[in-house]
Figure 1 (cartoon, helix red, strand yellow):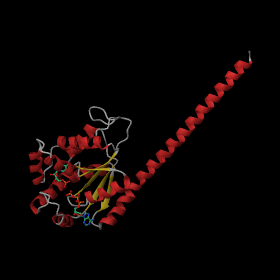
Figure 2 (tube, rainbow, N blue to C red):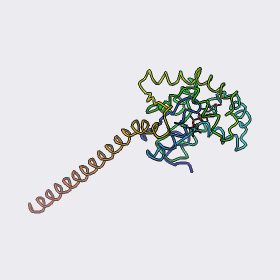
Figure 3 (cartoon, rainbow, N blue to C red):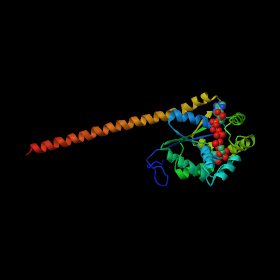
Length: 240
Ligand SMILES: Nc1ncnc2c1ncn2[C@@H]1O[C@H](COP(=O)(O)OP(=O)(O)OP(=O)(O)O)[C@@H](O)[C@H]1O
Ligand SMILES: O=c1ccn([C@@H]2O[C@H](COP(=O)(O)O)[C@@H](O)[C@H]2O)c(=O)[nH]1
């Protein structure tokens, strides 16, 4: 169901802070695996751009054949298609915290997303893993994906180095990249990930406390104003 607090153009209202974390890393670096754990522990909604594109193919959409051909070749689907799917999924989720996994894939994806949504990522979670390890993981993933074959895997690696790494470098220049050693076992990788997300929870809890204190002060001020008016009224009545 679409959240009615969003406007008809699908924009998030200006006063609502939307938190977006881009999750990037080579194919098979473990992005999806770690996102599942982040969702369980930190209340984010996980949006895998690849999963959304695969669902679009299955839905029988008019873009299905084009998307399917791009995926088989390891190529990047046009920005407007992916951004549309992401925006729709964000609005439908009702959440305000998102892990956007496997996007932006190139500079054009990045600029288009920021232009359309006006959202800058909180940070980029970057899973750093050697190609040999990623290749082994993808070849034994066994999820029946059309692109988990050695020919397409090699193409995906090339696209990652040529088009996606520059996006990571762009955000690194802005001091927004949190790099994780993804070669370690799953549990150890998640220990590093937890350390990155924990401060976000603390900031949210501090924010809640601040709002609570502001609420109490507001009530006390209202009570004081009421008391002053009551005294003025009694004085006025006595003066007769
Ligand atoms: N730290 C790890 N050590 C060993 N295997 C892992 C690790 N993390 C994930 N895997 C396994 O590697 C495979 C790829 O992981 P995952 O699907 O999470 O990667 P991904 O980065 O999301 O891949 P893609 O970009 O292709 O969608 C899976 O079979 C997963 O179980
Ligand atoms: O933003 C995106 C994300 C994905 N693609 C295409 O999908 C495949 C698979 O992506 P995964 O992240 O591994 O699930 C990818 O190789 C691209 O062909 C895309 O075009 N844009």
